[in-house]
Each structure stands twice: as structure tokens, then as C-alpha cells.
Image 1 (cartoon, rainbow over the protein chains, first blue to last red):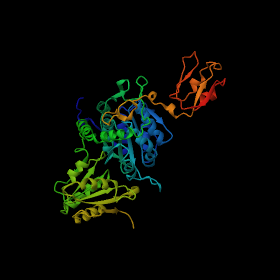
Image 2: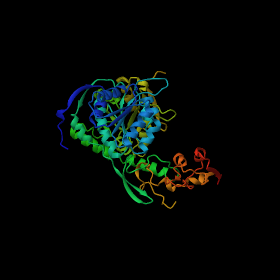
Image 3: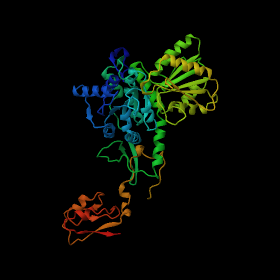
Image 4: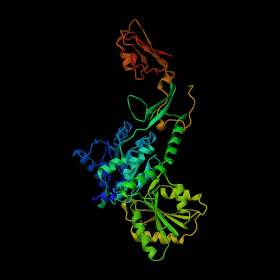
Length: 412
Length: 91
């Protein structure tokens, strides 16, 4: 593939949802089955417009629910299509059963999830309780900071998914990203089309009692195979371990695809799994996900001017969880503040905090950790509150016996 | 079953089935199984057509033969048989 100069990109005013729709439009997608839900609706609207106007060679399936949306996309993908769907919050919750079926049958689907709070009470604004709840469902999760990254992640997701043979969730913050206009550099159609290519179907060897046979990994009447058969105590455990090991083997694929994407776009998001900011000489850092981290970096700049040695790390890949990389990255700080835009009810902290603290338990120089749960249901996290958190963690010098878990920006 | 138990490294991905359901003798579940009175059978093939487990063998000419190692004994064939040639007998 010829390397394209990224000077050929067109800067378009797109919101996050439109950026995702454009990425889908350019990625040789065969089937989209989706059901609209705020704040994901614009993705579905734009894609259906592209289909209606004949701008894409794509089948748009109008379904009656998110359960059907994911089921139809799954079926299309099993039949060999490149498929895409999108949802948010309660829509994702309705997909629950199929989330596991998609990942367990190793179907390389891509789904955009526009992060929104879960009901009840009903709230259409951003937090991460939807995708965090799906963290154990076997999907790779990429968290996007802005509309540009939502566009880039969606394109890369198809390649990652098809190489890993695992589904990928691309997330973007509801309204903050999904409905906010931004200058987005859009690659030429043919560059993206060449980058993702046509979907290739892997072949698998099946040890039948009549001897081994090799068949394409898809639904094909010529080579009949069964997906999702009854699988009890004699084999289910082996299949789950196999799935988990496949998930753990994906970081090199994710890094490779980012590198290749960097060559055509100039945006490789290195070092891919997490992006440090002013951490070289920092005493303390705050780590978190998605759009909030751009504000955190601004606060880092302000506090640096006051002479405070603070830094920030934005995690981009939450699944598979890069525990080993985080251990290396975080071990040298005295304190790590962890931002969770999600509550794990009854747990000792938010999901990101629990996994980071667990990763650091085997670090020789255990940094202290402090958890901040913030921004539920779209609550703003203003810079002064982030500064307050930084000033607090600058005071914490040793890992306490009981974790410090605080709410940031809530009334008592 | 004579197939050796495979480990996770040996299994095809995605938990696709690798043993045919032919090898799974679901007939062991049956309490009742069909017995055909060949003198009443008009060889219409309805039993073969209706069987939800495809347990019947039929060449299109002779009397259909239920494969008892796969028949779970649901009795649909006996209900559908227009000449009442099929009797469900306790196994």
C-alpha cells in the first residue's frame, strides 16, 4: 500500500457522531443494523442518509430494538460481511445477551458506544457506567478523547477486530464529544478503503471424527459449521480460557494497527494504550479516560506554573487491560489519582481504580492511590475541582491500608 | 465417545461444533419411541417430514425407518400419521 501524505486530508466541521459515521462510510462496511438512541442517534441518521443517497454500497437494516440490532449485525458478520452497529446506555444494556455471544463466537464486529448514564432515573448525559458495565463481555474497548479520535478509532477498530477476531467497542462521550462540532481531518475515501481493505475470512481446522478438515470461519452452506452449539462442563471451560487468551494476545495487534494508521494519517496515538502528559519528573499523576483528560491536561499546565510536579495519563485501551504497562508507567510516582466516571455499586471504588490498584499491588514501590468518582449523569468537572484533587493527592504520601475513595463535585 | 478430550490450545476458535450431532445418542432420553405397523403405512412420508430431530430415514418409496438412537420420543410422528400406523411404545 502506498503511503499517503496526510496533507491530502480534508478538514471538516463534524461532531463526534458524524465523525464516526464518516469513518463507517469510508471503511467498506457491508451491513449496518442499528437502532437510534440519544446521544448516538446522529450516527444512525448520517449512515442511513449515506445509504439513501446511494453514497455507499451498504445494507442498512432497520430493526425494532438494540437486541435485534446486535443480533442482525452478528448474523451479517458470521455470513462474511463487515458489519457495524452503534448504541448508548440502555441500548447497550438491552444488547447484553448478544454482547457475550458476539465475542464468544469470535465475530469481528465494530460498535460505537456513545457513553451515556444508565437509567433510572432517566438521564441522557455522559458517564461511563454503560461501557464499564460491559467490561467483562469480551469486547476490546477503545476510549476516544475527541471527535477526531472517534473517527480514527472507528477506522482502526475494523482492522483490529478482523485481525484479532474479536469485537471492538469504540466509545465517545455523550454530548461532550458526540454533539460538539470540531475540526476533524478526514482522510480521502480511497485511502481509508485501502487501509481497511476487504474483509478476509480466516480458515480454521476442525478435528472431526472423520479426520481434520479446514473450513472458512463463517456461515457457508458449502462448508457447514455450527456457531454457538450446546457446550457443557466437558468443553465450556476450555473455550472460555481460549477466548481469554485471545483477548490477552491483542495488544501487539492494537499497536501494529495504530502504527500503520499513523503512516497514512499522521495520527498514531503513540504509545497507544495510554498517553502520558508531563509525567517525566512528576510526583503525582491523575489517570482517567476520554474527554475529561483534555481538561486535566490544562490543569496540569496551570499547576506546573505554580511549581507543582503533576502530570496526567489518559488511558485509551481499557480492554484488554494493560496491567503490565501501567505497572511500569505508574510505579515511579508517589501518588496516583484515578478518575472514574462510573460507580461500581458496593465495590471499594470505581472500576478503573480497582484494576489500577490491583495492578500496582505487585509493584515493588507501591504508589499511593486515590479514587475520584465524578461526572455522573453529565455533571461537569470544572478545572478548579481537578486542581483540588491534584492538591489533595500531593499531600498523600503512602498507600493507605484502606483505599481512599472520594466523590468529586457532588452535594452532600 | 472415543474422541479424546481436547485442551484449549487444540480446539477450533469460537467454540464451533467439531463433533456431529449424529454422534450424540439422544435416543437415550426417550421414554416412548415409535413402532410402525407396516401394514397400515401408506408411505406418505409425513413422519419423516415432521420429525424435529430428523431421526427418520426414508428413501421416498419404502416404509420410513425411525433411527431409535436419535429419537427422543416426542410422538409428533404418531400424531401426524394419517393412518395411525405409528404407536408410541414405552422403551
